[in-house]
Length: 217
Image (cartoon, rainbow, N blue to C red; front, side, top):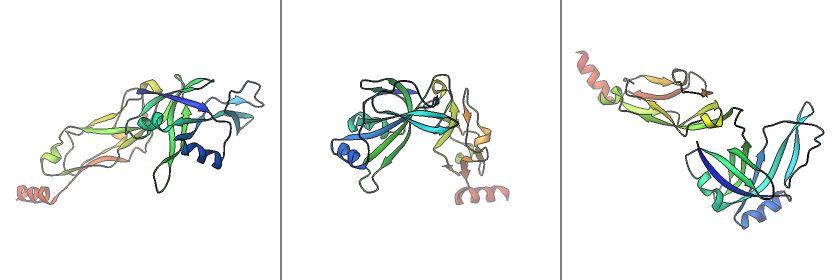
């Protein structure tokens, strides 16, 4: 996975009004969710913008509120590619994270908020990876039409093992046949989607049905 470097500034004043003012300055409110639980009450030092959110069983996670510039985050958001994000928080720590979620204005489509999830080298993460179909299937050669039902697959693995894309060879795929998640396998990662979910199918067309009928006579 490619690494995307992102500079961030801690945000101590939060709320709808403060967020609105930030967006007028082309700054996007963002949150980093820590994945490493801490014991409560937490006795460690918190950096600017950090707070503890309780998750139960006397444990909590460190959540960091910060801002990023629209220019700084544009190439991370508006791309089909996935990245490991190296976030450098001004006056604080640098962390590795993945993009967890992003919210947009329903009319203007402007970015309203971004959520990141901290990752560690030795702990698996779950994220969606783009799927690319490779090859010219025998079903398409026979007049069928290849239909890709899933553009992304959800995978689980260490961040360093997650590929930028998942390539699936479809050359063997015949008319009317499908490839399901359960038929696929990739090194060092696990597919989390339901095993019976259809990734792609070669559908019969009128031309292929007519050719099949003629060949059967």
